[in-house]
Length: 145
Image (cartoon, rainbow, N blue to C red; front, side):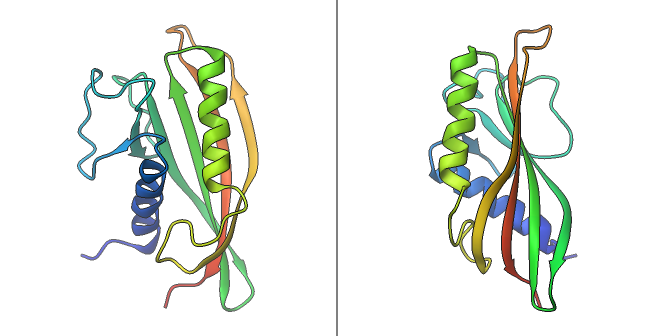
């Protein structure tokens, strides 16, 4: 069975985040707590949030929104989590915004004419001291054939 367009898009988005220096992406998604650091978090496909990794970015596809007959809004929820300081999670959120907001052709190869961060929310630390945020990012592009 061939991978669906949303799965391929998620993988390309993960690769774009890695290329921007925001984390590490491994297609097998095999990470250790020692390899997924605050400076280099693991990039994973959602929706499951890992219980063994403190430092990660989780990408989850949301329902796309048709935009006329030929276009579509691909929507993805980005969750960042770090076992670090408030400043470190704010920096990761900002750097993800810089990498994705008001951009063309991100991720490359998917006919995305424009992307933007639609919303963002920072969360208080959990009981393990992990800071987190979510961003919803819209990607306006052509419908796949």
